[in-house]
Image (cartoon, rainbow, N blue to C red):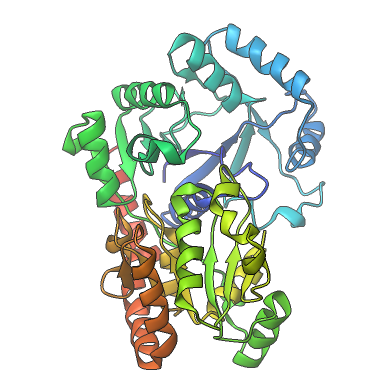
Length: 427
């Protein structure tokens, strides 16, 4: 058994992301390997001496945002001090706070730590000084695995960093990052890291080619998906009632997209293709609006399109509802321009739902021969795939069967094996 530190950077976000799912699954599988997992958060509350106060404050800030001025002053003060180090305190999760509300978002871990504004302060410090900030914990750890390119490190143990993709460099027009700062941060991380982890061969090749990392310093572990069994037990009648109640569409009578509404997801071409297909099967879009969302949804502002009752939009679905929506879909639609992995494709295949996805970046690695692959830049190709999937029941059954087989290549057991091989090099 080794003591492994993971960051809670994305786990602290109120609505989670694909990277949060990665971190949550990572914690689960590292624990399954019999290692002791610790998680380090950077929530905005003081490191008071009273353990109960720290426990209360940890949950009180799960979804609360502070005033912008107070936050800016606090983070600015920490950044001006330079990367001199942070000393997070342990959060004693004793059960005195009723935290069942957060049971789905908390990772499986033995210990939780928090450093007030740690990640914001370290990012501001890197912008000023160009160095990684040091984190010092009272308890010794055997390995720190940062699940995101964060400008922090834990001394006296190996530090490995997961770089999911290099989208800000490969498709700079799809993100809001400061590209120069992002590139400088990645160069600093790959220079200091003991090892780099990524989630596809496509991303691995990008890291080697764009950042100049030697091949033996980058490992692709892929990902796995964990969907609780209780969310997959409902029978067809119950499932039909759930999806109709949520969307108004019938069981196996709609196409489904889920994910953030932002440029790389290619929502605008997806909507254009769906309208061009002239299908009566509804398109359900589940996702919160992110950056440049208005551009992605501009077609929906058209008066004639607004009268089209076949496009159904949900800004959010809890995990249990989302699982039901995926299971109840005629097919999943994921024509993303670029993905480091493409978790929705694996989620759909795991649940036996046929998939239409892009033929770019990592998606062919995940989908294999178990999906209809399309050129995401060609709305006509997407429309043709939609019509074919809609009309051919035999094709849907075949892709469902193949998808279940393909998903086994990314099972939790396969993921554990890859993680174990990686960690054994360092602990």
